[in-house]
Length: 381
Image (cartoon, rainbow, N blue to C red; front, side, top):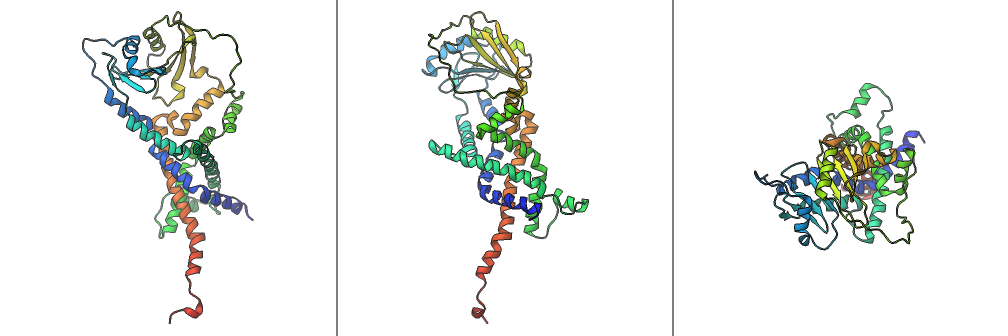
């Protein structure tokens, strides 16, 4: 058996076995391409005009006057944007969009839009399954993702013409006029596969990190450090210490804003009673660019900086892991990266369709034709 056939048959088998799941993940990937921008556009309905004679209320006052209306559940975060018209967003049991000038709760945000996108993500990740079925679905989608990685890598070899010259290369490198649907599918399958191969390898490989712990550990190992150990609580019989909030949140937000003049959003993790410091995430990008984020920890007792950690100061492993999340969606490279990710996901849907169509014509249709051929003695005269 030649090397070409040795690679071709696993390529074909993986495509047939995982084709439907790859198609579903690719279609949903296309629909989720501009998820962040869609949510931001929907949230703009909660923007308010800036009053001429009314300054923004302090964050502490906004929280205090609305605490009862936000339910009994603990608050989780408070987010402000560097846009005077944008509301303050407080997250507790729900999201609360609050007018920063009069403290009025404007609503719970674009829940319908977020629900639709959340359902798409569920379909993308675990086929929209719930409960115990979700873990089972993840086994199949994770396996299909790995098969897709092999399909793309093996396809990079299979597209190389047996006789390498420019005349043959351009036949599979560019779209061309064809005389049959089979030739068209073959051309589309190769062209889209070639031009999307590298971005697809990045998208698929980063997805493996979400499915498999070994892939997550590999990211840290390749970065030259030990993977973090999670889920192991330290045994401690000492009574937990509680801390009072002695410095207003408003003062802390102002200190966070002074760290980066070009900040776009600041998110405060609402402190628990046992938290000695308050954590702020300062973003100077669109929200999906990890290299433009920084962490700031301020003391609840005096408001002094306890820790300032921009992305550049993260360990190599943490930087790599942060990039993985947003390279998968292309967001780490901004709107251009998102567009490329969406485009190659669209190409992937066509590649699945054309690949299955080619396999059907070559291996299934001849069998059906043989079955339909009447016996010689029964042919009509």
